[in-house]
Length: 572
Image (cartoon, rainbow, N blue to C red; front, top):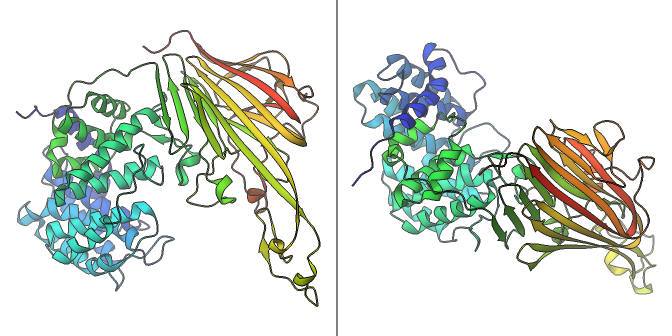
């Protein structure tokens, strides 16, 4: 028995589409100057969806049709002789063009059975799709998620213009295996690409190809994402290998996927998150087209199930642990790719944040540890162990070397030696041929997650080097108990401090178990964040923004830090 329609949801989706479609429809012959090809195709899709939807202000509007044709002419004008689209950093890119073709094909489905008024739109869409088909059929990809976006475009082309060659090519890509790990994370570990590319692409492929296994892949990813949703309505990204690793990612783009899977599987936890994703309002103009293409989205959600608290989750593949309670939500992370690859690189998980703490409106966005060791950058754990149910140890050992003279059989007349990289810098010194004198530095961080926060024990061993623990609090609160040192920065030595926002607060207490006393505000050269030479050599940084509290000193040293949340009115 089908569940009733959710008319409120459909009206909200139509309103979001109208906010995007009404302005171009009001000036239907105005050229869309400066709009890239993906934006042009998305506008066409939205205009056609608005024309089709009885809940849209543009239902049956001739101006919407005229605006769609204006945009289609602009889109055809940026389609090169290869069928790929011009524009963007990725030149002659099949995957980037696939994003556009996916919208073109969806718009074609919506227009093809809408009557003679859309016949010209239908023909123009078919012409653009046909011109792109050959290049997408033979084209390659350069990121993991691109394979699924490209495959989805091929599947949509086959849906409208059947061709077994398209199916064969899809099978080539899918035969590699979908890159989802044992914990339900895609290899890029990115909320952005899961929500915008991998999940919608795999859902489409599951529908067109009749592949239930691909539907299950998406369900697994969404189930894992449940434990990555933070109290502020964003999805954790610290472990991502893509651009979103340094930025918050909203839950809203996950709305259609949680909603569809909740309706089709009856999962109450997915229904709860679908409601949460829509709680701030629906702003996605593409959602109306999705309701027309996938009518199940319009059905009423099943009854939501309450969130289970307290709750612990440790994702072993990403080395990320989270503990959620009514008082605090704490994340511990030790899964950086930098220790293994010895470089900062697009496609690697590079974020040095190893802890976050949410206490209602009081948020500790990032805890990072700098060490003055050969300018090799902040602490990024190379290993993370689960010592007990809610206790973890993060470890990193850094090594740098001084090099001895070359052995006689490796010397060259004229002193010309090959340029090599020794992991810290490059020089014409043939480093692999030289004996090494190594200097090592080890940092261990033990974290005991509690219902109200976390207790940390930080052991810094090796030669005497300066270090600084940076606590970045989200702006909007009041810092008490720490010494201000200027420019939104504070220093904590003895005694506790609190960061308070309204009725919510985070309390910090620090102490030294072994080693010198903590650095005071006079040691400003110690109390700072150092991103390391991979950033500074090109004048860059990955520093956080917010209110910075520093605890510093000189190692070897053992530091204890207690982070405790307090909420006068916790969520229940």
